Length: 573
Image: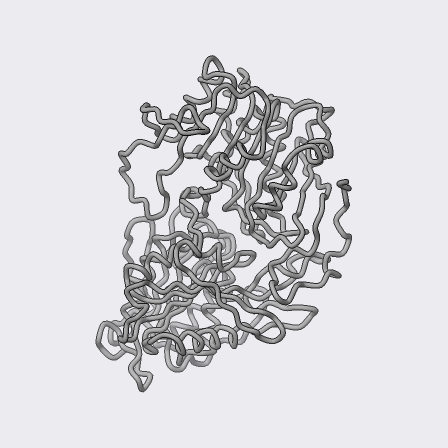
């Protein structure tokens, strides 16, 4: 029998699993609260025993007049969560009934935000899905309409009402949670949807047509065993699909009578869970999920200082059996992320496939983000039990491990990463400059929580490409920002010092290409040893085209000779 628990008062007292630091520290059914219109509302989170961080989340609006315990104990949901290794979040209608005046859609969207607070467990904004059943179907529809740019998929089981389409003209207010890296834009967007009801008439038809419009769907109807109507997106796509793929189908099952079984829901989950909603510039971008194993990435481990350290390794078939040495790129995730998630986020594996290099996606160590909070939020150069963790030896050992198995060009080893991964990228350039020919920190370049004296030198020199969003809360200071791109004073100090020790012209050459405005700092030989790029309409994020730009336009142009001499496009720097 299920028992509703309260979260431990002190999560920091719980031991981290040293064999897999991402493993959740607690399990079971827990009560949580959010504030909506000045009132506290409860919802419930079920954490599967042994579940790891960043797994997909189902946010479910259950039928009316059914208690959460009855809903879970008399259904397949617990078994489904355990089988699919997902987080389960259940809403509770106030006094057993839902309100369709925007109150409960706001409640559901607040739950979306709260489950990413990292106070008791760690989720990611990339893989959160809305589900509504019975009376909850209308609520889930409204929540998704108001915040389509955040959800990754929607499934509803029940009849629509006239109130649902009131949300077609509403959007959830934008939010920026800062250090949990969540920015909610609340804009309209494409969204994979599956709707089950009696028949496609009246309000049901109107809702279907709304989503067909949002998803730019063709009118041609297809079907399969489970769906009577399947509408694919129009084949006309005017923009590149490097960042956002046009993938959102509209699916409808008619004749649904109220009986939802596990087999049917599994078929629906297999559809909606294929989509991921990733951070990007402008608004979040929808793409197909790239399963590392299916793509061909292999998981490797090393034992370092009592922890099992992990990384995914992608080796293109073209270089797998090559005798010629190939470049190596280390690509590092941000705080709270993971190696697996960063394959999806960065798309650097696709760059590797087309540019014939090996890419590594290592996983960070741990740290405690909140006082009394859990101690296994992943962060580069973190800490455990009050002791700092040095991740540089792990990265260098990982590189040596790969070199023992493949022919690597030691003069073309590069590093890049986002947020905490950007800080780690810079740390590698400073502490192991002989290893890296060039680096590209994204969204961060130094840890603002620690003071460090100005560098006297980086020897040998390591070229820097620093990319960040013009609205990045970590990098940009609108009031006290410095240099031409208004970076925070600590970042400006780091960049000025880099210009000094590299003897660069402090007046940058400027140009813009697409969403990025570039500031190029040259040395006496007119080599760009420092390039800064600001991405328009982007907060704290990265995106696949950033990976292509990073490799093609910067990293690949630098290399080292056997004696350590830095070379730019064939010429000595």
